[in-house]
Image 1: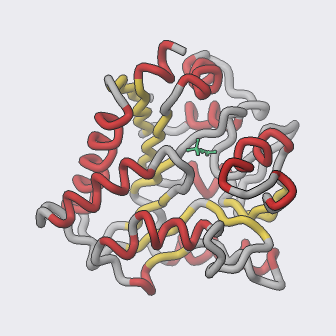
Image 2: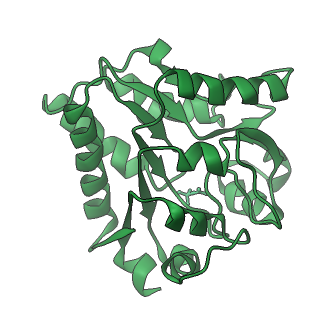
Length: 240
Ligand code: PGA
């Protein structure tokens, strides 16, 4: 793992956007794996600026998002589809039909999950996967546990994650109890991975990542098994 420590969240966001733009400029028809959460918001804003300045063109890019709440309609402002439209897709020239977020409104989640992995494979696999990390070390909604999933799957959210995500809802009761998430195998098949870690509350998860252990109780530690991972963290996350 290549670890880069940035002075600030702003610097981290610019650096991440530069890396994504470089990927797109190197391979204009690349497949990006994208993430939601508060951490990548600055990256998407910086990427929009690069697009507006004519420094990157998304017209041939395909994207697959990591996860979506279940059940969740794509029109719901709390959905990850809505988040992606607001934070990135509507500001850049990516083709709407080339953007993919797991379907939180499906009535057949197991078929939807199997199909998602098949679609990614048919698109040629993910070239660059952007990731955030949960305070509990989750990646996507691969939550800590005795075992982890390899493939895209329907999963219950842990109490920790429901509490952490309650800030986006009017009450914790409104947070969906389940999500559809790419599995650890789906993520580790990406050719390269860019993990963003910002803020003091991520220090414990980052420390586990820097230790030598691979532990399903901190799913992010499995990224140590991947040959091409860059971790961009800010000082707050690094120093704790
Ligand atoms: P955050 O979430 O960026 O909102 O902290 C990251 C995650 O839970 O994966």
